[in-house]
Image: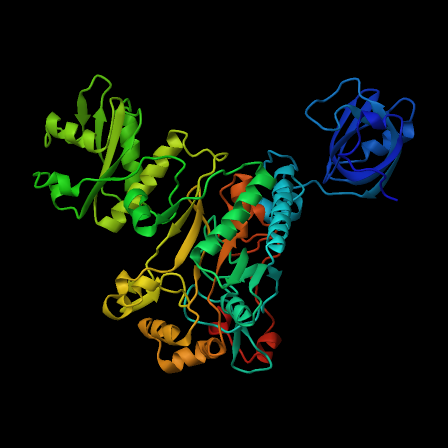
Length: 585
């Protein structure tokens, strides 16, 4: 028996017990006649005490130990004279009688502590060491608890957890597929699933009624902090439902998770915001509604001003920053530099200070008099002490820039508290998006999304105005997931394929199996997929999903720990009838 107790378990009630502990050496302190060792495992840290004078053999052993050595100790639990209130085990220590070295360790490349000296890339290379640190371990424990509670909730709602294939058929819609060559079917390829979409719909045709899966998905796309080439989603589908049935079910699940994991209760129905309203007031289809600061559009009220920046702009709008009229010129210049950054793309920033004494000071004083600035302040519902920040330019680009400016001001003013949660459903998305490059429509979500019943007639006359029976769950400006009511008859599905530019042969080749299934009594159905990694990072209060994944990839899609992706032997390529061009370069 390597241990009778864990390193986080012992308390004063265990005093005088003879115990065995095993773990990693966190720290060693030699203080003359006494040596102290902090022993760590997943559960906590316990202080060990060695009396150098009375047990010289133990003292010699202790001098051979180093950080991260794996040891077993036996000894008696004693009350500490110098207690540590910051540790759960801080009232006790172990008077060591025996030390067994289980495995030595090289000096780690970074400190295994909460505040480490290791950079991101170094910690990813030695991820197995990084996982020993408390913050990372806690994230993985949180992930486990969330997964457990998701299964618990959905099981109580009569969902059946069902596995779907990982080697599937490649389709051209959506993100780029990861492709897997088939050795037994020369010249043919599998794809790794971007989602189990068609399979969960087939399960509804099969009469399973309620399906879920916590499933790995794969997308070969450019990466950022909230994306990985392989990710996990809570994938769900329900039969005989309308949109509100799906929203109610997964709003209930979200409330359950917050209550059980965070002890946060929502005593209200999540608001439902149309897509058009989200863009109009927040410039984003994933608005952060923890704070107000809505966009105020100005173009109609301006008329012909003689100020060319406004007169030539398609769109002029701004936000009101409470209590910021005292911003200095240096602070305003920094805001201007912020909106001009290439990733934001605004040409400049107009500001109006509504001073606390009722006067106005702006960056456009030579173009607009005080009476005009007062009208703007009234339009913005500003009060003395507030600051108006205004952008102008092409509508879509300027809305996006103003959205980033709003979030930046929310951050500066302390409105984006990670311990405050503001969920909502964004609904009524456009069904289709026009792509100038390809000269055709693309599905905004996927080609199986149903149009709103009242908009179906517009598919023939004005497809751009058709709204989707689709919805996204957004919390604190993060899209946690989304879904839709699906098309469940082959006639409407064929119309959708034609709108998307599929020929009959292409539709049959790629989705014929689904179309055939619809001919055998497909029920009305819909579902949702929630990003499990994003949900976990939201609960953990961190921005990057990498920190809630045990073995993540870096921003280049590489696993620097195992050095993957990597070349394969020519023999393997020969088996697959594949050749690399230019001598593997």
